[in-house]
Length: 259
Image 1 (spheres, one colour):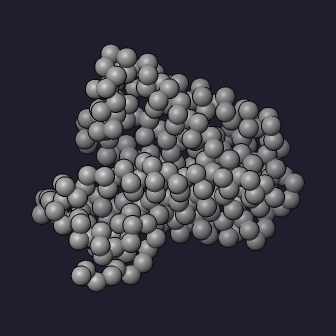
Image 2 (image 1 turned 120 degrees about the vertical axis):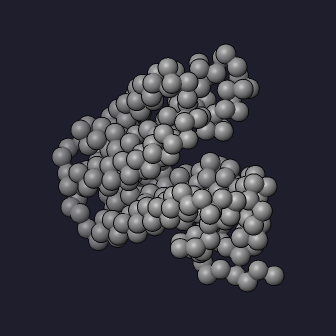
């Protein structure tokens, strides 16, 4: 287990340094977000290669790759269309000035790498300890939870993309489809994906690896997801305050009446 944890940490550090190097000629730190998802597929492969062969290790590579590559395609497509750096990184660049390229290595890329390492603990534990017991019921439940989460995330992203592409939607609030039941179906699905992967990793007896999905959920709700996105959106979309009153922030629930 120690070999897998240490090897994954070293591989992630190298991976993020390479992504940082790619960001320098582009002058755009947003590339970190594009490579966030594939980073988990990379960790799953590294962990499996450092562990005894097992069906569980292979399963985790498939799950992480399916989620990570879909997310990279979605974010990468949006990144190419915007053709500008994310507002978060623009603010950091303005704050740090000429020092931002070096500072970003630590405050953006290696920080994301550290988070990636913790969130991916189920991938590492499942690969390292996967050969100790065959796939069982908990693995099946984990795959089911993963599948529901991936579908929820993908459908939510597709619905929002269609809405934003419609010129008549300018200035309006997306509140149909899955967005009628939660203000962030993509984030909810993302969290569910990682709890599914967490169950597969924990099926080896390594319950401590659930720290990974717990951290991912915390980030999505309190740090880089719901809280950050909703910080100023009400000012940009007049109908959003009413939408907030009617709609659950994270868990899908029937909409309430707007008083």
